[in-house]
Image: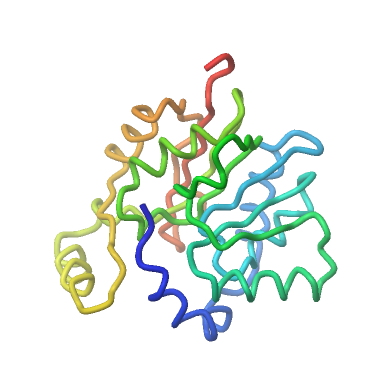
Length: 209
């Protein structure tokens, strides 16, 4: 489901230096998640990398678990949590499919970019399984399959270089269909910040399902 963690292990030391500045759009992203999580609710942040977003999300929920298949990323996330005194955030070096998550239930699951997943449809099915009935999934990801043809060719070529992670050429129609096929009802599907190119989908696991 996830790419080879060794790729991200190598990039962990310089990862934070490449993160964009936090501005009004970042604050709006956090607010959308906080509004979706009930008071005291439990949140799962899938593919959390060094935990920067995870730790900021912690202020809007009861507890948050950040997971990433890269142990080097998680090591940095844990160090940040300790340094900032964020007591309601924890981290595990596991992917979504890891059996240690079986039986756990979350009020919300966030996934900031499905871009590098080997099988995004399988990931969404797993997200549904980890949500409580009525729980919400929030994703933001670039829909490369909807980009101009020339960009798609360049990106596809770059993804075939040695050690590069997979690149999912997602489209809006295809991703919305994947949510529906996973048993998640799409509540919102739009771009909040046109400059970012990130498409946000909020979907809910039906109550009683």
